[in-house]
Image 1 (cartoon, rainbow, N blue to C red):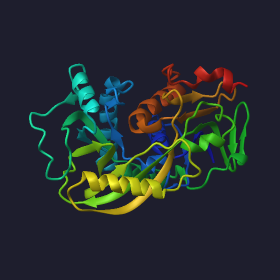
Image 2: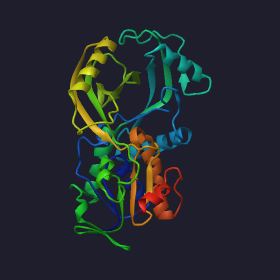
Image 3: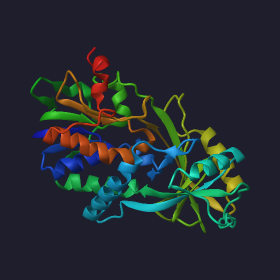
Image 4: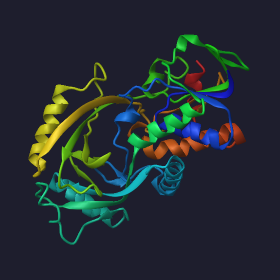
Length: 351
């Protein structure tokens, strides 16, 4: 089988890159073994326009929000699913300092609001210091998008369900060969898999582990995302909620831990007034990086090998935008944003 592009991985990055290649009528094959604990399949899919204790706008959010709203809506219409939903983040202040920071930033950030009354959620939640609202925010329905796009790829013969074996890859100046496949280019969208890829392992990745609980709770509105140290986000159906997450930098494996389960359950008991039931506990490793800017583009030496990775916890907002940039770069020779282009690491990648 011969194609123009081999895409390794069908998480959020591989999904969007293959989507834009299909729009450009490029031939491609996605190779993915559907790891249930991949970061894309464990993530909540939250798009929050502000970040950090200083409550500042996330990088590029003014440009990203209209783009991602349009593209996810378009993808959902094509797949016959709801791919993205607008939400309001109800940010319960855990400390007086966080309330003060929110109030201080409110004048400068149009995303931040203090409601006239801060008593609307006292039937369901325990809180003492009030809350602010962050809007517009979004939930990207990865639990619907990834399987729906996968089914379309399978139906059209554009997906090989297998574990990618790097030892079988042969790269020459004009051709990519992998088992019985031949391609002009190969793009790695394999998340944590890039750590063991000698082509890109020199990039300053900063992988971290995250965990989540899936709970069932009645009476909580799914129209909002709730935050108080941990995040409670609507998931799949009316009474299901994603709860998480943590950032663990020192970890031995990608398995769920007893420590997270116990700590998060204690937080839920203190926070929720409604009864709930824990249904599942999952963990994954996020492909974050030191700079908090994605890795996008083609290798400076092996020019037919590229990467779309390093999105960290912002994958749902960054992946479609930079997948489009990479597709436009390869098909139409357009420039990639310098802050994301891996050629900024030309020196270390050329060693």
